Length: 328
Image (cartoon, rainbow, N blue to C red; front, top):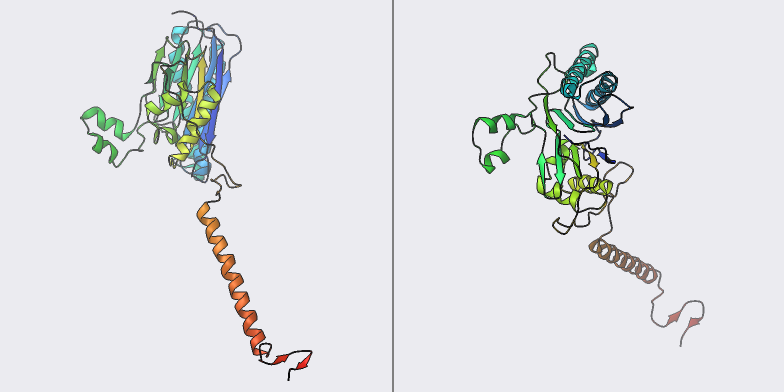
């Protein structure tokens, strides 16, 4: 494996979307000098169990995994052991979340997904539980690195499913593995060693529910700046009707190649927000026409009322000019 000590660019985006609260949590951490040359850690967690419980679960996952890895890499001598260290960090996070859920009645049943990318000098470790995804984006294509732990993914492994069956599957969001269970579940891990001049995209399902891989690749490779690309992805997901929290972290190792073979991204208009975080309403030509019609009708009513008043008081009697006298 060759060393990948190039610059790492970081970008992030999170939005509560159309939900009242944001139960997602993200974290990006740098490591001090260590024997295995661990450099950067990025985590996305999507909490479950209601506002307070879901947010607590996802925050606890991110903070616990980050703390455990930060402590352990300082004493790790062999980078080949890094996967087992990651699995242990997930195990401790699971125990911590379950303990909090058991001790607090308001947090009963809380849990969270967790997806991480750990960058070392010569490799990247991918690990996840749940349906928050990790992609590797290169100019020539995109690859999902994480494994979906959902009822739908399990069904697709056991039999061939048509596009219509997948679209209408009743338990699309049912999670089969998560942190916060009484018994620790298997953590999916893999090692990636070819990631120079590429970008990792880590995201909650608020993004992938409405954007497919083609669109994610199009946005990332068609935009010159990683932060702009990540912002565009989040805004695009919201515009397309995502009804979940939307959280994205991008890590670019070196410089992602962007050339004429990459599809140019169309402009994504920002989501204008009011004080409540929802889209603000913008004036429409039809609305202006209706306002003008109402103004004209109001003036017509006032004029009719004035004429009636003057007529009732004799101002329109023939042959008389009030204040001057009769005309002979």
